[in-house]
Image (tube, rainbow, N blue to C red):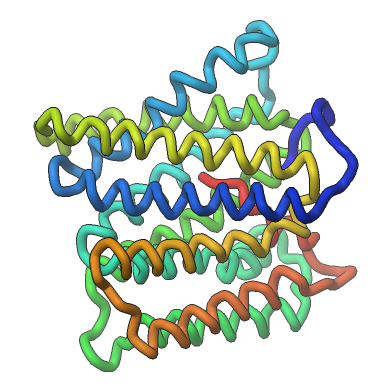
Length: 304
């Protein structure tokens, strides 16, 4: 993940791995809390709370550097990241209402498999054969989870896959932003723009919620905030290309939560699909080619 050199420490991959894994545990909790909150209110309201709570806490941090710290020449990229990130979360939260939490998360976090294709379309640079092979293995896992021969494609599955494409673009936009923008500015503009974008969605999709829903919504916002903070801190100890593979821990955490809390035991096809998606993603992340996009573009797990 890109960021300031301030606070950078000597590399400690073990600590970086622990912090990154904790970050993706928080991401898994975001999905679980969204599912719990969905009993009381709409997807749009959940999305608004997620972004607004993070904006409230990130704003004072950014403003400590004065208004000049907000100056950017990359507003278009900030808008792209916010738009695709907001679309990703909405797609995932909607998918969670339609299909098991573990399946929705697995399909959405197949995003790194889409990144070589998107990068090739955008840059027309050569992508290593090993990267394509890894993506192919991962997509075979996606097909196993979907099992379209049994029931076709459900709307929740289509939504989760759309979320994967949005997430892939959002992750790549962070890498492009990171060439010149500090981490705090990237986060501030993301939460500001995402709050603005999610407000009309929430207004259109508004559903009054009881007082007992508030703790779930607040907890969701804090889980999202902690995930971002933990990743920022993790990247002070190890680079993105080494921590990128830990993005797949969210799939494992979510499957465990879905099993323990909602008694959705993964099927053998789901287990095999998870293994292929994770394995294929790791192959893609680790692939190297002098003529290809940098591995960091595939590995960078900064969340939308």
